[in-house]
Image (cartoon, rainbow, N blue to C red; front, side, top):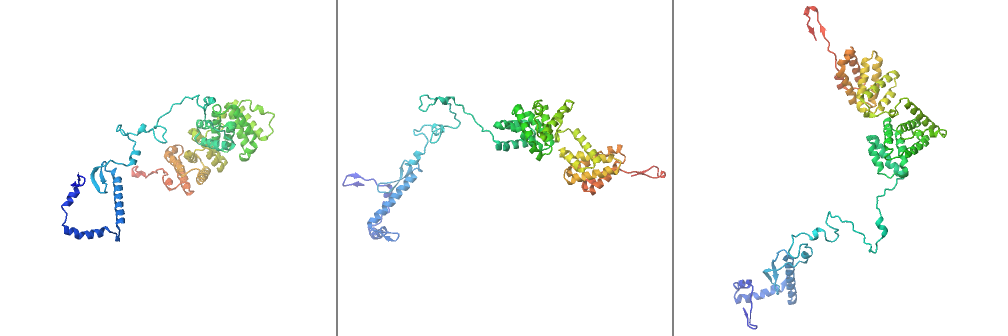
Length: 470
């Protein structure tokens, strides 16, 4: 089209050309003009004036422009645009104008690089450097206003505060009690070396001995070994002497809980002297200066043991070895002595206490075996009845479990043929012993039914030709 007034050409969009084919006649246009006018003035059932109609069109144009701005970044150059009149123009290339995409984009603006973050990830707010980077020590600037000359000679060390009396007991007591379970002196030495004992260093031996007084003989043996291993690496000889001095002063209080404390402390002193923890003149230094009777008893006990050691007694075996640390032959010997003493005295409570002191519950089947063999080798009913009473007591008190009892009986069952060579009536005595054990509730039916019996043969008369009938 050409504008006659200004002499310029006007290019219409392609959809206007499409509308030229659908023009109606002038009569139809005049007939529908009234209807279209009414539709433009009525929206949602409300009649609008010309001013309100223009406002509504402006809002629609603004809404269309906002929609195009939102979708411009998604179309990557392809998008819709609005003309100056608010008409939608398709097919135009519009660059995305989202400001957020530029602010959050960490890629190179020059079109170079591989799209990696800047500074290798070491830059940005709140970042001290890339991961794994180690900074070298910087030289001190003497021209710095905050420079301090004494700062160069500073030495930084980790300081552990010394333990007070309350913290000392709460820390050391669990270490000693755990040592009674595992028996590793090196672990105790390492744990004590990490602590700042301070003035409480000399309290370690006295605390360990006081705990051992209330424990078993095997724990006292472990305590003597612990003191010997701690002297030197962790504790000094003066610490040991101060600790035993405190034990002698506290004997009146220790006797209240442990009546035999004076004798036991004397044995600890004698063992410490033999292990070269205490000097030989330690006991002589108390001569003429002892006013407590308990202290006098303890020092006399230590003196007697040291004199006996000069005659050949080994003080290092005074406490004995507890539990599975003992040799099997020694355990068997002690069990036999225990049974013989019980047959002579008849004190079952004392026999039970001695059996508990052996501290070998996994080896009590040996005690059952030795007791039954003693019954088979005896010649009277007294031994049989006393052994049954003892086994009944040990079974009721659960000192010997049913499993240990079963293993002891089964060992006798397996060796009865060899025992019968020395004891001809072994099968008969064993059968009698097993029946009474079952009636007293010592064993169950399964153990009783496993009892072997000797096969009996009966020979017929001579007229049968010497045929043997089983």
